Length: 151
Image (cartoon, rainbow, N blue to C red; front, side, top):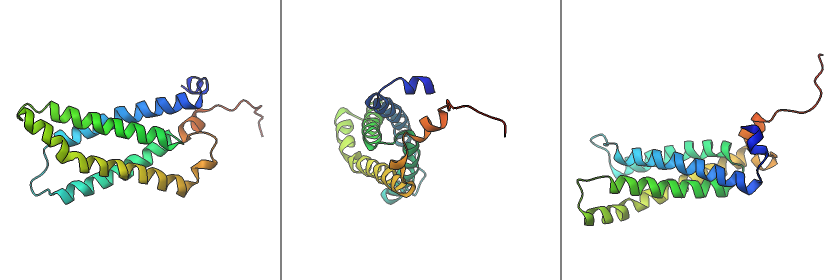
């Protein structure tokens, strides 16, 4: 895997990171929307859940990409696709209810996306990630080419 990542350009690595983020967020957001909520959950509980998931997701995304645009693009695509799939796959709703439910969930989707981005920026600033030559995963997988001696 490290050889593959070394052979592609920086914008191509960004596209790969955006696709990975989009796939992960599509699945997670779909599961979140389709999972029955416990009784007693309010919109405030859903906001706290999004805040928690956004902070954790932003921190994990910080490990996969040193740049913000792949994380932001991947999260946006994943949230839109996951929300659309959750609404379309619910056969108990009429067509009009499907269309309007997407608008009802839009503030929660935007809030989740903002939590992911804010968390990524906060983690990057806290750990000074701009000083790293590569993302943490690529740097960890890279094998040094220098001579090794017993010492």
